[in-house]
Amino acid sequence: MPAHRREGLVLAVAVGIVGVTFGVLADVAGLSIPQVMVMSALMFTGASQLAAVSVIDGGGTGYTAVGSALLLAARNALYGPVVARLFGSSTAVRVVGSHFVIDETTAMAAMQDEDDTAADAFWWTAIWLWSLWNLGSVGGALVGSAIGDPEAWGLDAAFPAAFVALLAPHVRTRPGRVAAIGGGALAIATVPIAPAGVPLLVASLAVLPGWLVHRRAL
Amino acid sequence: MSWTAIVVMTAGAYGFKFFGVFVLARISDRSAAAFQSLIALVPAALFAALVAVQTLEAGGGLQIDARAAGVAAGALAVLRRMPFVLVVLVAMTVSAAIRWQTLG
Image (cartoon, rainbow over all chains, first blue to last red; front, side, top):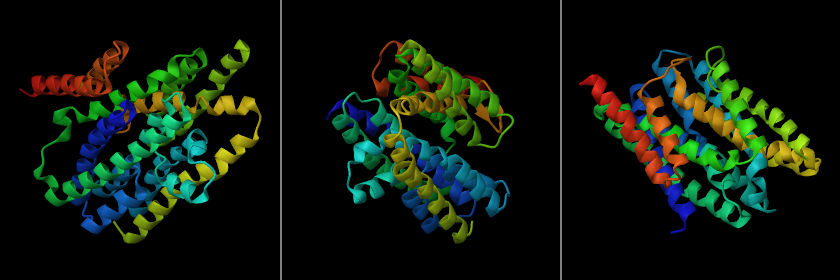
């Protein structure tokens, strides 16, 4: 198996276990199995799904749940320009491909040097991740809170560490480093003062200083 | 949670993705090379932000704990050019070990 497919599978296994967490949380928050299945299969954006069930579990209203979920889902729009060319000109492929534009698929695609490999990485990560995320969610919802705390297994560190590896190719250039440092700093500064999801949107502004560095280098 | 909420969230989530691929990508394709080099920096800014938030955010505030130690160990593994699966395993092991230490 080529390296990028294997890495996509590793990422998907970690995400699948987070899916179990989502399923357990959803069950505790009173969602039915069909609701869990529809969310994981069709909404397919982990952070939003987790946020929505956490709000409900914490006694929040449906409106708050929808609001948090959508704020967290908004960043996926920013990935469109990064991956759209991998879908070619077919409208059907673009419509289907759009469904799978999330952090993990974009990251796996964006770290490849060639477009062909990037498209292969996108689709394979999408297939692994979608399958394991759905499997994990339903499994979690079925067994409910019988499972222990996933944090005890260090799973909450697995996801950000994986993204350090996925970030690595983007910080090889000076503009990339400036954008990354700026994005991290803006996100950290925004976390205490804004609802979840907003820090990531604010962080996207860090492309501007990165771009200025890029312009000056030309 | 009501089915209405689920339908709205599902439609909204796909709406954002669709908007990115069909609208933002087209604007980007048709604009000057300068704008495209701006877009090329989006992964750097967003993935760094994702790492920062997922490592330090806790209950709406910031917190340095076993998770952060695990991610730091994972980052070292990246610097040492270790394979992806090891990066993930190192991060999990360090964070779990610290938690077990503090619990036990």
